Image (cartoon, rainbow, N blue to C red; front, top):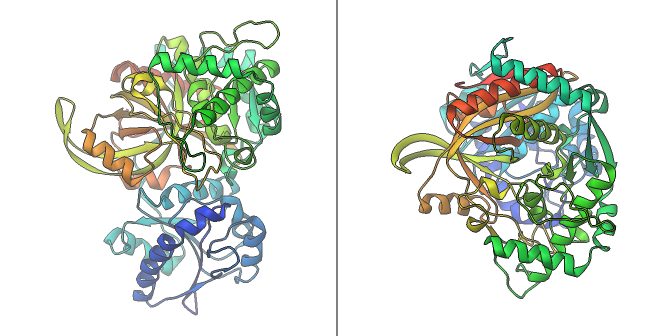
Length: 536
């Protein structure tokens, strides 16, 4: 800290198109951050610059990240500034060996999801055992940010209040006993998690080491997206057409157009349904109780996006899939729990939740979402008026129709943005229905599995508010409006170790409390370190 110079790095996407589009937003955020640092008497040195050959100034690969960090003094104070989604593994090698104080900083925006990228990086650093501090701000002039920045500049450390978190205490309640018995049976029966190419978009925090996973009774079957694509080629056109007719009868709307480059087309949807059928058949072949498709790199260059596929897999009511030779219906009456972006922490969570909720007699459909953004809302919510901080939970795929107002009839499939998916493919878009949920996150810390759990209320917002929130984030994706009782915005940001959060509905608040008690006890019985968050 002697020469009062802070080094700054900007980590980005692997895809040049995404980095190019986000360049201006990143530079605007960095300018505000640099002003704040200069006002405190510090200089800012950006460790890498604009590269004309790629059209942006982001770190866009692990290779380039290692090169950049070679030029940063290992004891220098370092800021990782994020206004966009980023691939954590690009900078992880450099951060692992950095000895100076590290600060991760994000903007607060739905449109430019730096906070989502930063949460993933924070979770990755937590898993890797790297000491770091973290801050976020809308304009980098608010008192809370400036006080935190001064603390970090003075001591190399800033902490946040997390009084909403408390360690799970042993319980002899009926629901806790049910959860423990469930866990004992779950571990005894064992289950296979199908992983279609491990590690997606740099999410190091989303990979569970085998030695931590196995004691829970779950084992990975490492599959390849090449196999998924090859199996797609064996699915008959008539089978995909039959699945499409089933969805149309259920009332699902498709935003079809004619341009393959910019619009969703019927052909793309049929290709997605071939992927859906192929995924179910491969899961049956390998005995998988759940599967995760990597979703981005590799497969996106061969086929339309997997989003519609993921939403269908997570719903018990879905187009029937039959064995290619015997004609037997596969996973009849059941969902095939899918963990979006092959997030294994969400995969373990989702599988346990699905089976436990079935035992409780609750609708077991569950999904992960991005903890995307949020803002205070005051106004009507159904038949009442609320004044609450309402989060936007948003994810491109995996959300089941069972979660939507109106189910399939309330859902719509829209094309993924061409910036990310050249070959198109539709999402399964809807507005989450009002009700009580249990939210959770499994994560790795200090070489052990941990889990945070809490209650949430999904609230209904006026159509105009929903549309504005979609416009400010990603309008093609399913959305959930969530209030987290007893947890402030900053408490959630300070604690949550991932960009992802798992959600499942319960019939009522009291039922959600029962489910949370049973799930917490089950996870503890499986060896996880469990904490409860917020008002329980």
